[in-house]
Length: 133
Image 1 (cartoon, rainbow, N blue to C red):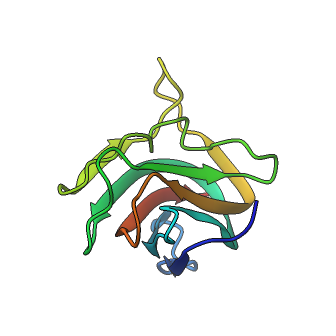
Image 2: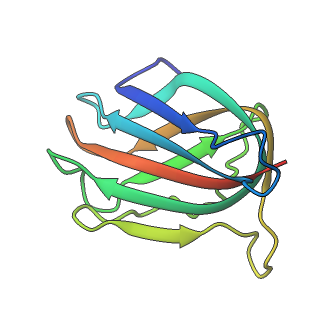
């Protein structure tokens, strides 16, 4: 799959020396290509349990019901499909757990972001919260 679109990643690791501060935040600003996608760009890694996903549409707004996947090294969507059908004008938060459970999916290593169906030049921000391992 060819790379398309662009992204900027900001990873707030807090104070790693403070054992009480285990919640971390990753912000990803993205802009879709003319084909409406952001694919296989800037792999980044972290170790921990995914807790919460926030999507915030930008300007220009993405297409209604755009989709986000966070792919691990095996191509598995660690968001468990919860990044599908995002709202084009409202900020939306989602608790990330395995379906039918209260168990948060683990991440251990590199991941890549894939945004699809976002429209020509659609933009937004993805915020991931996780508990560091």
